[in-house]
Image 1 (tube, rainbow, N blue to C red):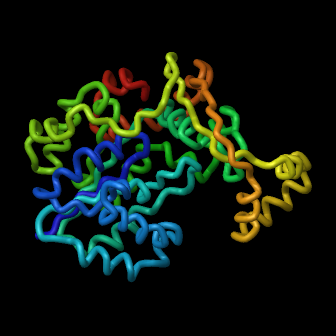
Image 2 (image 1 turned 90 degrees about the vertical axis):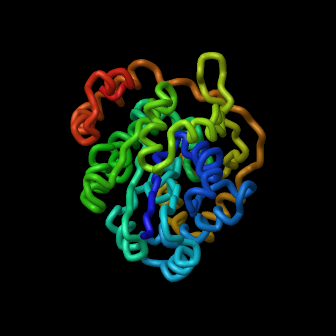
Image 3 (image 1 turned 180 degrees about the horizontal axis):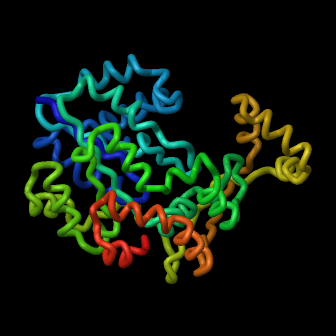
Length: 320
């Protein structure tokens, strides 16, 4: 029997730590298909490179090469795939990948598929995404917090990314209620026994073994200041000509239209100046936090039922 456990993220929920400190080390018990950082395992990183054309085309291109790779690597027993790109992990957020498209790709290859989704309250998730690259637009310009929060809360493409109850319901609709497992990143931080107890059940592996293998690992701890603000390192700075173009409304509109062409975008990016600056990303203030929390309050009331959780827990973890 071929079983797949598909861990789809969310981003900024300890995914890299799980991939590199746990999943890779389970490979003698579970067939880990990927993903992992390239320096650690190019074998696993190949999956992401083959996945990209399929994901970028919303399942229309690259299917043959992806099928060949999966057919070559799938084993009998438990197979594990951890890949945030399925749910869309870009800091510059985009539309979600359709769970039914994922099902069409994977269901013919497996007898059983379980989905694992790890969520983090929207206030912390939006700040983490902003502080880890989301503050820069595709031209290297810095978005202020109001613009980024507005995009996350109001843009029709991006808001569904943070509406966890809807995302979970879509996966349940595609794969079945009992096949979708929801974990809280806050448990990973503050209640590791409960967090790894759920992973132990999903992976059919003793919890004490998972805890021993994982240890205190939490890779990619970002540089922070004493108040908890992130330090973001800017490597590219927009050139003055581009800044001038963007300051003129009509010219900016024409530039945005032309930038959809790859050659124009490449020229634009190559004109940026290389730099090596550090920027302190201030924590969201109380008003910004409250605004985000209020915006998703109704959604998180539904999340309470969808995850079969309790109100005390969601209040403690700042969902409600």
